[in-house]
Length: 461
Image 1: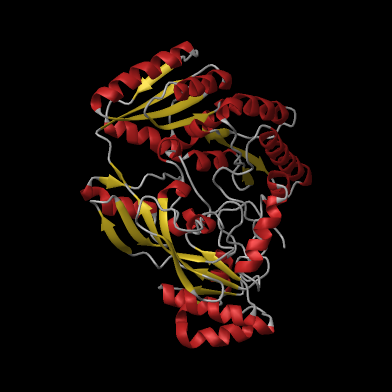
Image 2: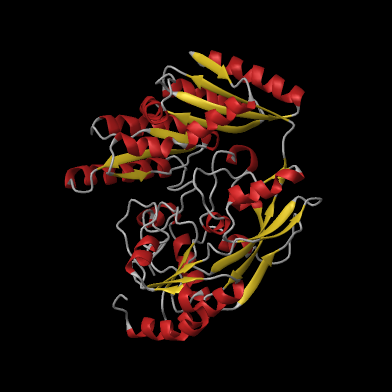
């Protein structure tokens, strides 16, 4: 067992009779819960508690609140900006075992799930109903974690992010009190919107244990395409034109030439190594046929050098599987090193300018930085590959990350479109929010006066 503070030791003594062998202090388990997918230095908790119900989460928080011990919610461990790290020690509250689908209301197109359910499992359960949950990440993330970071993904351009898709929550507050926010009604004007206070709060205000989510009917028809362009300017111009035409775009993803080379090497593919768009259009058969034809015209007008429609559903699945392998393909360009996955989002009209400006700065450094993004909503990622043992490379990667955020903010954008703030982006919150950041601090102090919930994340008090 690690060396702990007297307060943490007292909290563990209070929790041990209730959790038995689900209170874990081995180095291996603590290290697993203090690393995750982040590029930031690992920071292990003092102990891990495996919770199985809202009542157990409430017990943990009540005990930790009494002793002033930090609590770090932990789901799938896929967060990128260090949300699950424990730089101040404390207890990692693992809720991944809370994985029950509690209700599916097919007629109302909503469902209620525990926080540890993954989106993949939910969609498997929904398949027979003709409904689906649309947020499409590359990770095996839990729905509680996705709500906590206000996650999105490839389908945001059509369906929105977790912000739009969460109708209500069960939340355990820092002192152990259980509250329910929102409900199953599609709209409400009753009081403060507490649901969306917790969506995106990254576990700094409480622990989400149950979610009520919107569902959608599976489209009648779908067509995927892979389109190659001579450069990024041509590809992004096509994106802007397609958005202005009001097409039934469900997904529209961009990759640069380096990203395509990485994908070819990783997936044993033979795709053109130039700027590329993945596109999916859904709707009724006639609407899809019309929109696909119009999109192809727009792509040709923008200079597309190749347009490859998926001939079958299996071909479409293959195309999107390749897209979801992008991060692993990037890491394989320099095995064993780190990668900062940037996450800015800008107004659609500024997307070409933002990409061009940062690519110019990267070219002057020699940094390996493939680009991929959800460009239909102005959100793109650069994976800045660097050797953490090389101070110069490390500083270069951090500088490019900072410059990209500065560019995005100057264009009316944000430092993070979907990964959240955690530890990695909190240095930019003052520039992005100004005096509004002080209101966030006041809310944090009001809800969590002892400062136990995921301390140090998003901003410092």
